[in-house]
Image 1 (cartoon, one colour):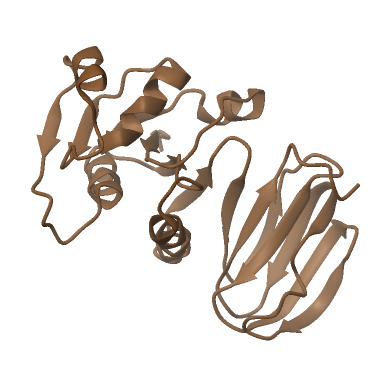
Image 2 (tube, one colour):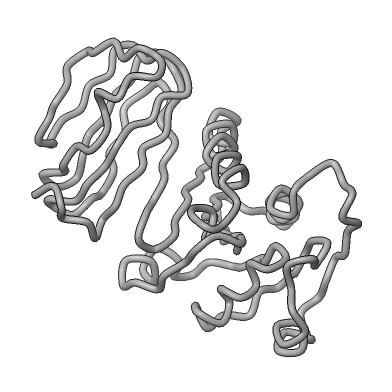
Amino acid sequence: MKQIPFTILLGGTLSLTERLSAQLAGSRFIAADGGMRHAVTLDVVPELWVGDFDSTDAVLEAKFAGVPRERYPAAKAATDGEIAFEAALSRGATSLTFAGALGGTRSDHAFLHLLRLAALADEGYAVFMTSGEEEAYPLLPGSWQIDLPKDSLFSILGFTELSGLTIENARYPLDGFALPFGSSRTISNVAEGPVRISLETGRAVVLARPYDNSGA
C-alpha cells in the first residue's frame, strides 16, 4: 500500500529543527487558518487552506493567494484543525502529523489536540504531534518504541488509570506498574536512547522534549 503522509499546520508554536525537517520529509500539507504562517517557516506551499480565517492577516492571505481555500463560518461545530484532518483523510492520508498543535496562547486548543491524538490513535490512525521542540505520541494498549535522543526528557500523561505500564531504556524504568489517574509518577523521565513502552490497559500520551537535556 502506498504511504500518503499529511501534515496539518495548526496555530500553536513551531520551531524548525533538523529533527522536524526529517519527520516531515515527503509529506503533503494542509493549513488550518493561522497555521498557514508555519508554511513560511517550513518553506512549503500547502495544497489546501481551511478555516474561518479569523486568525489570518492580510499579509499571509496575499502571500498564499494561490492556495485553494475552504472557508467556514466562525460559528461551527468543529475546530479548523478537525476540518483540516477530515480533508486530509478525504485525500487518502495514511498518517498524520499535527505541526503547531502544542503551545500557543490557547490552552484549551492544545489540550484538545492531545485528547484528539489519543482518540485518533484509538480509531487506528498513525498520528503524531510536534512543535519542533516538543513532541506528543499516543499511548494505547500494546508495545511501542519512541525514537528519542539519549538524555532527552519525556513524560507520560494518563487520561485514565493505567495498568501494566512498563518503561524500558529510561533512567526511571517501570515493570507492569499500575498508575493511578492523576499521578505525577511518570513525569520528567530521561531517555537512555529509544524508549520502549508497553501498556495493558488505559489511554495516555507521551510528551517528549528531544532537545531538552536538563534532566541529564
